[in-house]
Image (cartoon, rainbow, N blue to C red; front, side, top):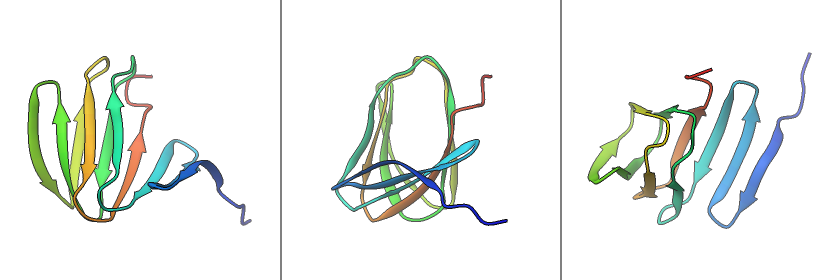
Length: 94
């Protein structure tokens, strides 16, 4: 059984695919993702590339492979320093 994946969002930054429990995010170098806070926590799996990650007031460089846990209501922003691939699990608090 093979199904096409639903495109959640596609723009100049890259694409986000619905992978059931996960979203798969591919972003181009120089693009910004997130830059917000939301009620639910999430886990990001940086499987390719390098990002500048800001959570709250702290900013650091993160290289793949890495697991990033972000609590609910925490401001976060990702700047792609290279092309990146990033599965996102928004179900961690449900």
